[in-house]
Amino acid sequence: MVKFRLKGTKQNAFAFKIKKESSKEEKTHLYGEKIYDTNELKVSFEDIYRQLGSNILWHEFDDEKEKLIKEKEELVDTSKRLQAEFENYKKRADKEKTEFTKFAHADLIAQMLPVLDSFEIAIKNTNDKEKFIEGMKMIYAQFHSILEAEGLRHIKTAGEKFDPYKHEVLMKEESDKPEDTILEEFQKGYMLNDKVLRHSKVKISGK
Image 1 (cartoon, one colour):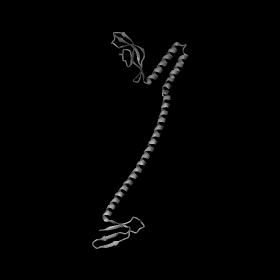
Image 2 (cartoon, helix red, strand yellow; image 1 turned 90 degrees about the horizontal axis):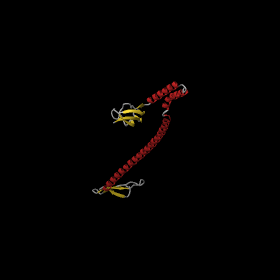
Image 3 (cartoon, one colour; image 1 turned 90 degrees about the vertical axis):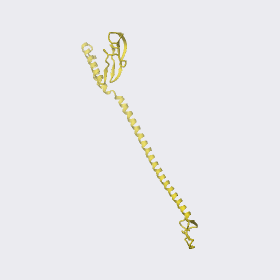
Image 4 (tube, helix red, strand yellow; image 1 turned 180 degrees about the vertical axis):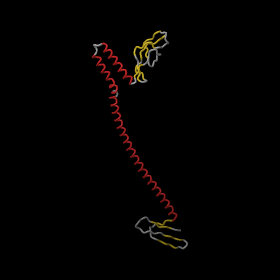
């Protein structure tokens, strides 16, 4: 049977006692007071290993915790930066929108300036009937050309079949023409590209 005597102070001497039952011989070294059986010592080592393993796990947990805290701080910083960038973007977008609204019709107005000039010329020639009429026709042609360039077009009516999406019926008259044929236009209708801006006011045939 082997026995150990241990004590945990650094300053004290270390001694252990080995006793062999066969020879009855004892060897003793000073190192504390309590004598441990080898079986007890074995359990003690297992406890130590478990404790060491637990310490290692806690150490790893602390490292992982610090890593997660750092990642969280980085994410918070990134979130704040992105939020600030978005706020700046919104301010720029609002400013650009305001500027666009302010000058959205600048090109159209610039195209209409020659029409304004033609009106001034026509007004100066009111005493000359022929020149005045000629000036009015020129103004109409200029104005119509500008609007056509912007996508405006007249809705066809004469001889067309009534379309409730494009035409508005003001009168209905008996006719030898097929029913719902447009007979007369009272007011022109217009479309801007594919959108109806104003319905044509018309008279259609009936039975």
